[in-house]
Image (tube, rainbow, N blue to C red):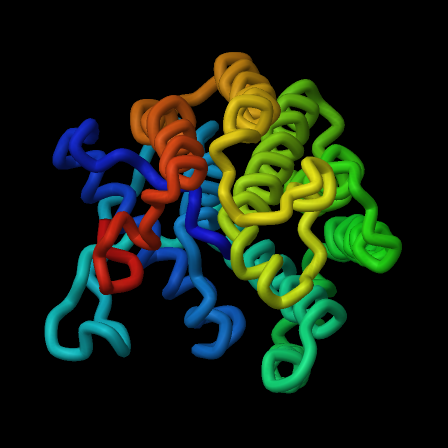
Length: 294
């Protein structure tokens, strides 16, 4: 969705970097197999991370398989083999993507609103299929998005209230198992959603001020210019609070596979993205022009 959740490649071993790319490609193929090509264009590093966490309780990793795709039609690329974690991540990706379309339709004006309406129409069938597979998650997402849109309409200046509504959407992606693992994962993904929402708001300060869009960071600190220098420390503290809770939740998980790769993303990648956004040095895909290339 946003792409902030990604590893720090120089700190990865070769096999870990390869594994991340394989899961990314495997998720793309899982989305295509279940929902067609349309939703593959909205694949993100964030959902690759979710697929890794969703499958981290498994004992073994199946060997990668070679698959061709639209981006690589001539040569087969190594992809993670299809499994329950990738299928769940594909379903969740479609739900979150469609609700992002809905949110844009409510927020935007002019050509952007027309585009959001078109995306909602094109993506409706896939969304209906994903909702049938994950009805409880979708209900939670709908309620959270309705609350967020209400806060946006009243121009709520509370960052915590706005971030809470967004965080409940990401917490909803955790399957209801009724055990301690579910509680830990819900805590983790709640704070991941909170962190992503506030970080994205900080990254969008200039654009939102120019276009008059709702931005809780602008309202909370009464910004008159897009410069973040004066509010960098308090903003960094609230983001670090969520990062600390994510790290603690991870330490409570029993991780059997991809532990070091997930640890790299949580303990190195997310703090690095925080610093880069607040410093104004953040680049999509780490500065690479090609989507999906670490």
